[in-house]
Image (cartoon, rainbow, N blue to C red; front, top):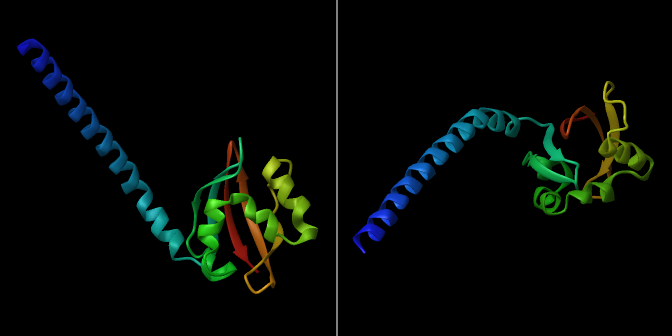
Length: 141
């Protein structure tokens, strides 16, 4: 009985040490990204990082989206990333689809219009970099 309790205690101690080390690694990553996130939150541009495969998913979307597209836009787009296809101007839908598929020329700025909460279309120019995920910086005209 004593051996079993001793074994359980050793396992718990090893687990605690492992969890402590993992927490420390995660904290170092947070500390590395914190200045970048704070910088993007202070700019007028929309910055986002998303996966496109197997489905569209935002890994980061700047909070100033609400001030540009309207109240609760950030929350709505994080919950439903495909919402972007519902607010793009119909003439720009093909450009947005090609961007998602990776078949667009990423060497040139990408120009699209998105509809805000008032129904007005706003012009955006994007500089994008394509890899297994996408990193975009969108600037308003």
